[in-house]
Amino acid sequence: MIKRRKTKIITVGNLRIGGSNPIAIQGMAKISTDKVTEVVSQIKEMQRAGCELVRLAIKTKEQAKALSKIKKKVKIPLIADIHFDYRLALLAIESGADKIRINPGNITEKKAIDEIVKALKKAKLPVRLGFNSGSIPFKYSSANLAKKMAGYCLGYISEFEKRGFYDIIISLKTSDVLSTIEVNELVAGKTKYPFHLGVTATGPGISSVVKSSVGIGTLLKEGIGDTIRVSLTNSAVSEIKTAKMILQSLELRRFYPEVISCPTCGRCQVNLIKMAEEVSSALMKLVIKKPEIKDMTVAVMGCEVNGPGEARHADIGIACGSKYAALFKNGKIVKRVNVKKAKIELLKEIK
Ligand code: SF4
Image (cartoon, rainbow, N blue to C red; front, side):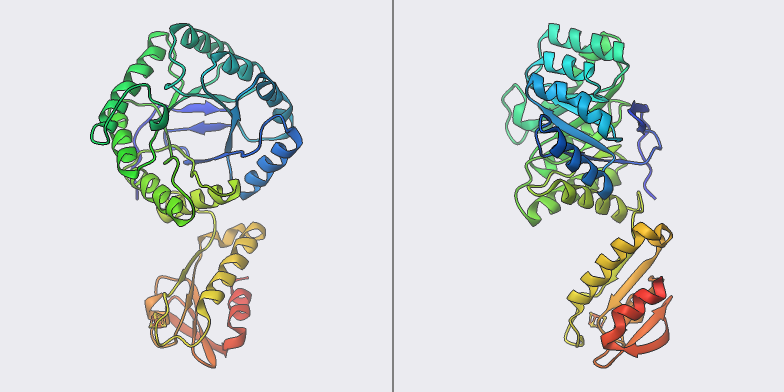
């Protein structure tokens, strides 16, 4: 079991972040907030997929003001993402944002920090200080990025503390996995604030899933991280699904039955890849109606000889021969069925 780092607890809307509270899944809406109907529909879709708080890019006054309309229509906390102009942060706070994310790389003036702190205190809202290697205001080499970024982060946090403000969540993202891990480790060792994790600009396709999983997963394994966001050059819902898989793979949270399937080899005589995908997607639908099945481990194996043994940790599974498939429970065969009906029989047994 992973031992989590001890942090201060921060309230964001109806969520409590940090301490031993569940690691929350954050998403980012990919539609401008001034298109209220469309963005509300996307947020609801994300929420159905498992999103627990959502960040919205705020670039104009109109987008900041639109938060009040969105707020009336969605239940999860809204995070206003502010760059450059601190006045947009003030407007977003007035419009009902539950948290403000500011970029310490481009909001640096004393007056801007004074005004933001004043408004946050008045509204009793937290801030995320979201450091990003793409916008830090100093030169660095790849060799010293993490150390320089950590030093800058600690200095910036102290500006808030000097003003008596401590409702802070920290994020430190770079576009490479190693420096993201290093900078988070450096700062986590020096503060008690909760951390939001992510790896930014991860590239297209499978590369982004791998980079996010390794970066976020390594930090979570070290006990660092209280909210996560997976950034993919893909849909908002894919980001949420990937985040859930990262948390489940580390046994930090459980959302759906775990499907284990063999990699196949020369012994396999059925289209196991298709069968495993179909079983997995059927279970994803079934768990919405029957949440009690989320703790099951289900195996889909390619041969009767080794399948049950290889999947001995599964609660239930199917091992396919050329004509018949063995249905097994806890590693023991309990029934033989026609291989063409293997998937249906397995699902029937689970139900
Ligand atoms: S379960 Fe059977 S088919 Fe699958 S990898 Fe193992 S030996 Fe090969």
